[in-house]
Length: 378
Ligand SMILES: *Cc1c(COP(=O)(O)O)cnc(C)c1O
Image (tube, rainbow, N blue to C red):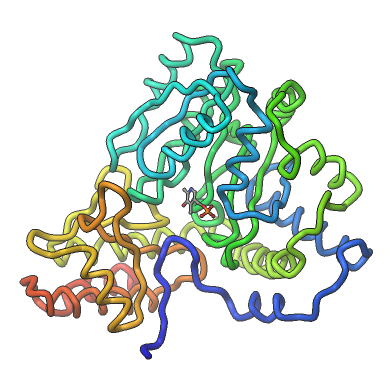
């Protein structure tokens, strides 16, 4: 069995301190001991979300937090804008339709970022719009959207801005308060260096007004229940105790390094990956809005992207991600979020070169690694 290396956009590798913390014997959640942990985790999340407002921890994957946003903010028959530039943008539309919310879908060409002026027009033409659903990093295409610009547009209207930051939080900048993001959702298994199982959701004062009005059926994901409990440093249901203990440890690491330095590291990893791709004669899928979270690279002419990913994983133990939906076989994605450092990237590029070479792609061995190393030496 080959040694395993994870370079996927969730789950991401776990720091040993986090593993150790989660392996400690379980404690009870209605205790002062756990309350201290919950408080520390909530404060740490506010630091990472860059907000002074509420951030709730849910026992769900990231999509649970997305669903929480939809059911708490909107009711059947309400109207929302869903920005669709990939598979995860589509999820907002699917969720809204599940609750019979009218959707104004803004389609963005896959691989491009959303044009904020289109959202501005859409909001101007339909004053009934209550929510704009956006994605910070569209993980399926490797695009980062300009959330700051979106925030500037949406804050001038009655609508609230909801951002899926599941893959971007703790990896690239997102100023929840500073950019007027009313609701930000995230998950544990991406930039936050934890296993899957926690969802996070922040709520602004403007968003609370909508929550008060919403009549959607909900129980487990009712944020009013979450708020009532949080005000007493408690949770409405049994929390994912060990994951939250791990979260404290992960947040401690992030705080110790400092958010700005964490973002700078992600940028460097991304720059190195992009440089390697370029040096190998490979094309980025999103050259104009390439994310520092995950790099989507087009499979070159004659190379089956699915087979490339499968060989890297099954033969060499290096797991990267393939393309999703319409991009299946056409792109592969190297994630560089969370607990990923320079030599993880070098290793990933090295394996990529090896398999590309074996598949008959013509290039000089080592050119990708050299380009990445040059970025790291800067
Ligand atoms: C991973 C991801 C999701 C899905 O999160 P789950 O934890 O699998 O529910 C949603 N949106 C984005 C942008 C993601 O990267």
